[in-house]
Length: 269
Image 1 (cartoon, rainbow, N blue to C red):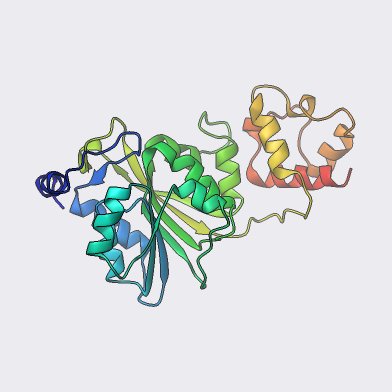
Image 2 (cartoon, one colour; image 1 turned 60 degrees about the vertical axis):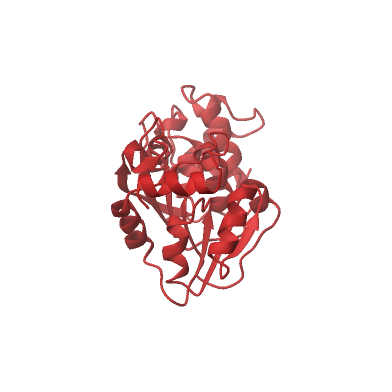
């Protein structure tokens, strides 16, 4: 849809884009093509779309996949989507709450393809990465700031807990940066198309290893030496030596494999 078409449709539906719901509708066909190219959806696949809005992406996905499940919070848009796309399995509700509720999509090889609502993109992403759905590929549009956090490397300012929680299970690629003018209304920030492919890390995380706990602890005070942030009961020198992590290391200096090695060593304590 062009901007003119989107505005006309919104007028017909007596709708105004809601900033509270993070509604910014895609109006650039080239960006739509890039999303579909990266998603590489097949006829036999199942796809989850979050925040379908006016159905710009929904229409293309529904024509190409076996099953499309969509989650939309706006009741007014749900009414429109049900009329336009009766073949789509539409769930009306808050995506974060739906994902937290134990929501599942049966079938192998699930993909997520979405222009995520800006205001809740990070909690949605956290639920997708760490929840029970286990998508094998996700192609999502996010604020560029969030995309930079996902793709950040050690010692960069954007490197943090979200980076590591995501990288534990997914390889991240920033496929394309999107200007605000590609949406209506135009957001105040740039966006990016991010591709997340599920994979296993090179170092295996042992059951019971406190990976999330120590990452959260370390980045809570990222400029302090990590050993000073761990509980006193931990045999720090021995555990750091086992993990081959310097005692002077700070959270922002360690790569994923070092965090996993340290978590495994601490689990032995």
